[in-house]
Length: 417
Figure 1 (tube, rainbow, N blue to C red):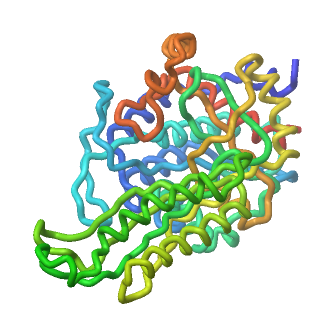
Figure 2 (figure 1 turned 180 degrees about the vertical axis):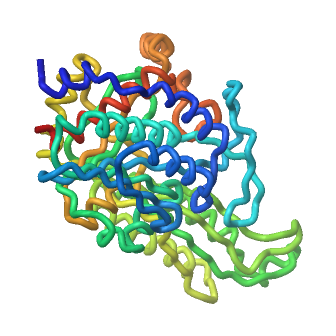
C-alpha cells in the first residue's frame, strides 16, 4: 500500500467536532470583508493545535504556521466568506442570517458556495497534520482567506504583507466542493478555472422628454445594441477551439417612464482560459462599445472600469503528477480526472505572489444516489443543485471526509518523511 494512504488510513485523529463546527459556520454566514465572527471561530479552533497564528491579514485573513523541523514548505488554502442568497435547503441548521451589501442593500445570507466546508476541512487537515508530526518534516501553513466571492481577498492578503509573514512556499494547494458524487476527488493539470473580470461601462447620451426622442441621444437604445453586438464577438471572433464568455449581468438606465435618461450602465462578466484570448476579447468589447456610441452620436466617449479580477487557475503539471499518484492510492476509483470549470477563483494570486507552483482540485458533494440517478437520466443540469444555488448543500460525511483526506494527502506528498 502507498505509504501516505497507509498512514491516513491508520490515523486515529479525533474529527468528531467537525459536524458541529460546520453547522455553526453554515448557520452564521458573513459577506465578503465582513467575516469577523467566522474568523474568530477559526482562530478559536486553531488554539487546539501547536501552531503560530497570524490574523487580520488583508481584512480577516489568517495563517497558521505548523513548524516541524527541516524540509519543504507547503501551503493549503481555504476561503470562508458567504453569499447574498436566501437559503431554501430546509435543513434544521439553515441560515436565516441577514447582512448589508457594500451597496447598502439588506439581504439574506447563505454559504451557497461551500466555503464553510472548505474551512472545516482545512481545520481537519490541521488536526491530522498536528497529530501526525512524527511522520512529516518541514513547514505546513494553513491559509484561511476572506473575500473570495468578490475576487479581492487573496490579493488583499498579499498586499497586506503576506510575503513577509510566512516562509516562502514550495507548493500551494487548494480545493473546492461542487457537483459530483460525494467523496470523489477530481484533479487535472493545466487550466482548471477561468480567468475572469468584471467590466463596468457607462454610456453617455442626451436626456429628453419621452415624447420628443428626436431631441435626445438615447443611451438605453445604445446599450441594447451593444448587448446584441457583444455576443457576436464570441461567435465570430473567438476560434471555436477556444473558450470565452461575455455575460451582461446588469443593464441600468433611467428613472421614469416618460424621460429618456442621460446615461446607461452595463456590467459585464467575462471569462477565458487563455490570456491571448482574454486580451483580444477585451479589446473587442471596447471596440464594439465605442463604435456603437459613435454610430448613435453620443456626445461623450464611454468609460470602462475593470474590477473583480480573478486570474487564470493553471495547475502545475509537475504538482499534479506528484499529488495525483497519491490521490489514486488514497481514494482508488474515487480519484478521477477533472474537467475545466467555467467558474473563477482568486486562489492563484497567492502562489503567483511567491512564484510557487500550485494545484487546485474539486471534491464532489452531491449525494451519490441523487448523482447516479441524474447521470443515468441525463438530467445532471436539471436535477443537481450547483454552487451559488439556494438549495446547494453538500452531503456532509463523505464530502468532509474526502476533503480532509485530499488536503492532507496533497500536503504530505511534499512533507512526508
